[in-house]
Image (cartoon, rainbow, N blue to C red; front, side, top):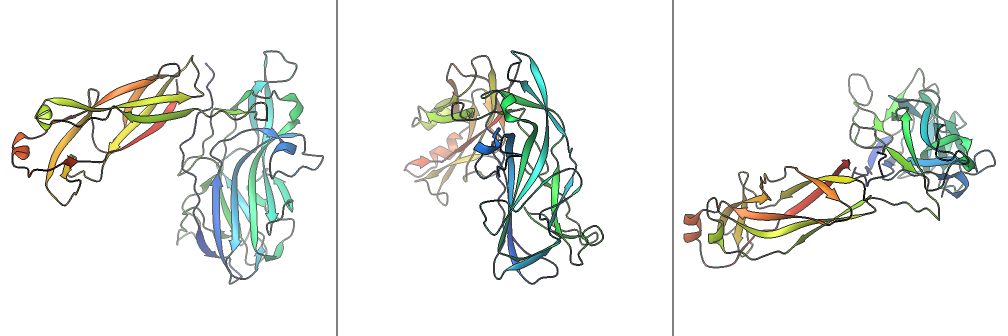
Length: 375
């Protein structure tokens, strides 16, 4: 069964790190932001994508954006380059082709880097990723730089007219790689590579190289892409599968109903899907946590003040014991019907309650869901 586009809950990495380009005294702020949702469109219809005749009608998808900003004076960069690693230079997507009926066709793509200098609207340089060292400008040395923006795109070899609007295109060949950022203090980056750390990178003092490269898509140590990428235009907007979590039927409880092995319902967790498929089944991981947790147990606090008297308790998600912060699988979620599962409180000590001062006892629970995938 073909998979629908699902919402990605990968964090957008936008980390500012001060740095000094070797050979200059200026400080910079460097950020990199991978796209949360990948989508294809015509080059001419893609905001910010350069559209000379050679690429205006290409099929493109933005993967991520890196930005350098000078914090003080204007800067000089020598051989600024992206060092591409752990990935392919040629890619294949599979999907419908105009005029092919229901037949699936294969399409070739490559990654292209587009550079903008000093907040310019039009790019100063563009370069396909065909080797490990990809220069960011057409000059060995660029001066008077206040900012430099670099965008990573998927670009098709064929014209966009052969692609079907609204169709999903599946990446079946090629691995999206990682990168480092570097300059040179002596004008030859092959012999003199000065790495610039970004996105939380650290430089190994023994090798003077980053301890790990930056994924172009994804986050952390992974570089992943959704199974399929949609062709989006005005008539076919991006439809992201969304999971809406609600905590409903919240009840005040009588503590004696949760003594020991007894349990009493405090609420229901409810999930509603948007843009799901009636033919698919979905799954999430759900977790419960609270600032009240002590030694692995939740606590009801007098008047909600955790510095006052506490009554320890446990939660159950239907029949599953809740460990604070740990994921619990919630399977068999369907688009047509809203899914609900009860939440219970249990394992309250009667002696602790008998000794408790009079008052109102409460706790605040944080509930988090993370989509697993479409089955």
